[in-house]
Amino acid sequence: MKKFKDYLDEAVRYGENRCTAVTCNALANHHGVEAAKLGADHNVRAGADVYHHLKKHFKVKGWGDEHEGKTVKQFIKDNPKGSHYIATKGHAMAVIDGKLHDSSNKGSDGRKIQFSYEVTK
Image (cartoon, rainbow, N blue to C red; front, side):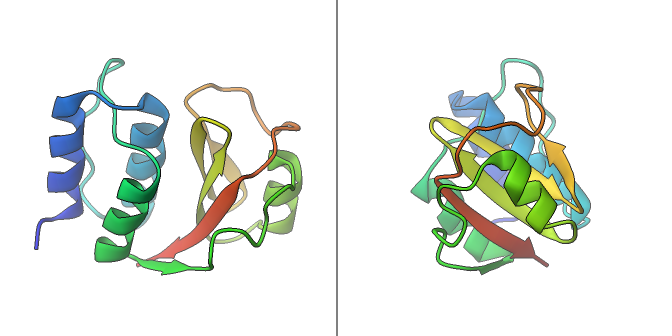
């Protein structure tokens, strides 16, 4: 089985969504897994592809829709501990121990959660 870093490195070469790269690397770093080396133009695929790779390398809890419709701000308030992959329309972020890791630097705002997963080692 490929290491999570190998998946990230492969995805980076194909130039997909940058927000997902930041999110996956934040989760990898938090759990002590080697992350990809990313520049401003490097990206990782989004959606189901990321979910399947997360499941190969981490424990992923939840069906994804438990927090659907909550705002990013509400999600952070409700989840001050743990590491989470969250997605809003067209964007991915990580929330790790109450801190938002977001490539857009919008902060905790009113964007609505479409799906989320708790990610553990």
